[in-house]
Structures are given as C-alpha cells and as structure tokens.
Image 1 (cartoon, rainbow over the protein chains, first blue to last red):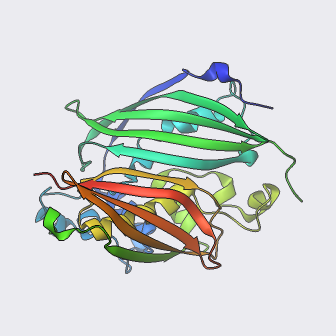
Image 2 (cartoon, helix red, strand yellow):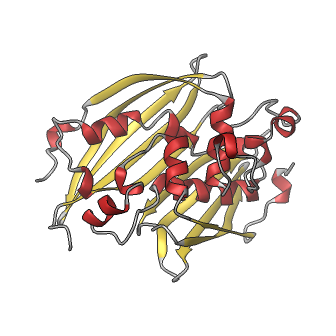
Length: 162
Length: 134
C-alpha cells in the first residue's frame, strides 16, 4: 500500500523537552562504546565536553555540550508520531530509516527547554519503495533556532523475504 | 582547541566503531528508539534481517563522533547528513574515513565514507560542516 501524498502538511507537536546533563553524558557514552547508567564509567572515546563535567566547565560553553545527533532525544517525536499515525498506516516491520539531515543552530546544554514541531514534508514512491520525509524544527527557551531535521523513512512494499 | 587555520582541504581522519549485542539496547535507552527490530532478534528476522539491526541514528552518531574528533568541538557542527544504504547488524564493525574537502568562509566541510568489515558501504553521501567563524 503506497503512502497517500495527501498526508503532506500533516503536523505534529509542539513537543517540549528539558535537557538533562545525565542524558547527554549517557548518550555520548553509549554511542562511544561505553556503558550508560549506574554501571557506567567504563572506557569510551566520546568527546570530553559531552561526558566530563570538569572538562566541559573549562570549555567555551561552560557546561556539557550535546553531541550533534542528540536531537534524536528531543526532535524525533514528529517523525515517530508520523510513523505510527494510524491515518498514514505504515507497517513498522517494513520500515527503515533511509536518510537524515540536520542543520544546527544554538548549542544544546543542560537545563535548556526545547520545543519541537514538525510536519510531513514529502511523500514519494520509487519502484516498490515508499519514502516519507518529516521536517522538524526545534527552538530553545529564548526562541533561538536549535535544530532543523529532515527525517526520511523508507517502507519496503515487496513481500518480506523468508 | 583548534582554530580555522588548523584545517586544510585534504586532511584525513578515521574512526572505527563496533556494534555488540548490547549496543542497540543501550542506544534505545539513551535515545528513546525502542523499535523491536533493534532489540529483538526474532522480530528482526521477521523483517528479513539475520539479527537485530542497529538504529540508523546510532550509525549517524558514530559519523558525528568521527567528524567531531576532527573538528575538535561538538558545538561547532552546523550540518550533518547521510543516507543509510545498508543496515548495520549486531556483530558488525564500521570504519569511517573522512576527508576535508573545503575550508571556505569560516566553514570546514568534510565528506565521509563508512564501510563495514566486509568493505560494504553502510552510508552514502555522508558529510558534515563546522563553523569556525569568530
């Protein structure tokens, strides 16, 4: 079943998220091969300004800095909601993340209160594949643009192998 | 801390990361993406994969780490993009080989190839830009 192009313009949000230093640290640690959470403090090669508060305090930012893809924690909701939206009707088992673009504005630090909105920006078909792109826009508590995301999923419409 | 004058077109950098069985679970916890295709081997098999597959955004986070290590500052990244051309399956390693392609107007631009342990590309069109304007 192809995704109906009439869903372009469908909006999600606003979603609010308060940034937590522990989550920045756990995110950067897990991605870099460490163990997040209480059994953490394992070796990882994350950038020190995202995991080490003392090092970050001496940085130009004065506090932990979110890594460039931390937006997944606060800006993915419009994309996730579109994927499970019964009106759009995507089968999760046939879905993969196909493409991702971020444009970054103000840096993200602990205590920031971020507001994200999003909309279905594009629906297109290519052979047996359907693509859906959701554009997200996030601003911080002083109205600065923090992140614009373009999140594209592909739905495989051929029979699942096996 | 690096300055604009420290970057030259042609600079090269490299990072290798591996997806063990726990990584998709850890990444689910820190990102919020608990799609069962990343957590449950049986669900991944139903979807046609040999094992659980890593969240594409975790591969992208690896890409960002490779670029951030070169830029020297996670707060200066202005753009980041990639296409996920092949899933990263539990047990895979990915090597990111980046190259600075331009230093222009305070912007440092890099392009990155990402291949698994079999030499297959897992990302296409991966690139990043960082701003070193004062």
